[in-house]
Image 1 (cartoon, rainbow, N blue to C red):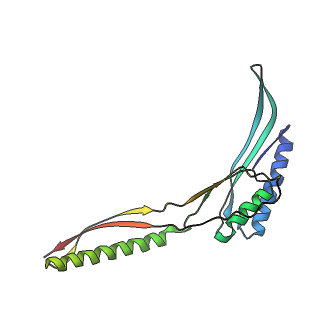
Image 2: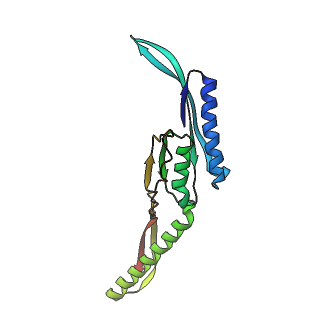
Image 3: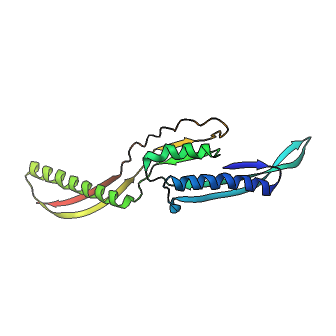
Length: 183
């Protein structure tokens, strides 16, 4: 949220009212306290340059909130409500996996099974037997979340329709390299 005005206390108060209204609305929408975090708070002078001379003509206050929306069906409604209550900038909607450890382990297990199956097929085709695993290494591809940027919302306009946010899907990859001893 970004607010500006002639003196710091008035700008802080105006900005705080907007932020507090958004936080209260988020909580009413079921967003937990732990999923709302202030990531930046800034007070800066606003300058006007006239004939090479800079003068302070006011101040700006900005506050950024990071909000984790666990119910993906609510993402559009959260963005819409934030704009409705005075948010004038929303950036970087990201979709992530809350706890990637489990899905990374599943991907690794599947990659190892695939490696074993391919090795057994090759061993059968060559008429040899697999004796043991000699080496193993893994490289995880991680995840590449889709990004969505939504900025410069104008809260003075009539209520806009709720944005249709497409969540897509996330892929977790695990690449394994296994060397088998054969006979």
